[in-house]
Image 1 (cartoon, helix red, strand yellow):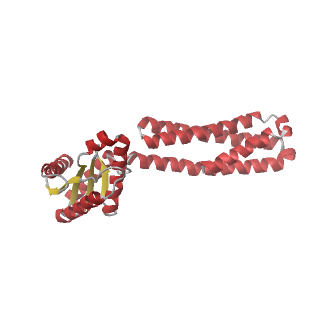
Image 2: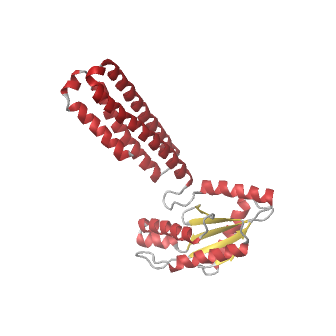
Image 3: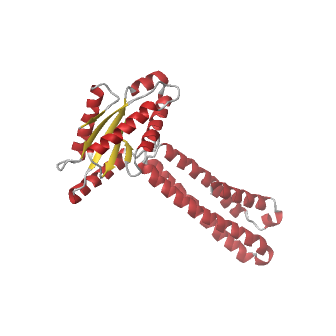
Length: 282
């Protein structure tokens, strides 16, 4: 949509500048509007890219403000075009008709683009930008809902907490770029190893959780082992093989979000203290 809109804007600006008869009718305001729209569109894309890299509330607000600015400029251009058409029907009827059609095309594109912006913002707000796993805020909200569902409907779920063994050595030896590669790749490996409805989240530096709805602990343990083996066997580029340690717990009747997280954490550290590259129940 951005490429199409940019092409239309370029054609419109060129048509005005290269036609002296049109310029005689004082269409400079319309040219300025179109140029401003083109510039604001580019700024909007840059702001959206910045937000994807680091989805802060401040950057989100900047994207929304710039999106509204683009919409206002487009509105002004359409109204100005209508005024021009009304005053110059006989001379401009063919050019104006094409111009209006082009602006209507831009409006349609803006509707699509604006929806995509809001959809992207919604996705970015609940995902970790590096690994694309869910972020801690979404994980907390989802787990609290599962706890409430378990209490109301007598349902259980299991929680797996996992951590990369000796991850600090990766950063210290190979650099943080390689560390980022490991984290992103790990999330991909785990995501491909779990079920479609399981929820993978990054809750800390190299710590991840997997929430498994409607699952008992023995099945969760088996899944955790599949994940562990998948990571152990993966050929990471430029570094020795890596392993993970995992802790698995099942929801208890008296659990809240803090207690189940604490039990999962303790089970994971039991796995680490027992030699790493293993899964322990909690």
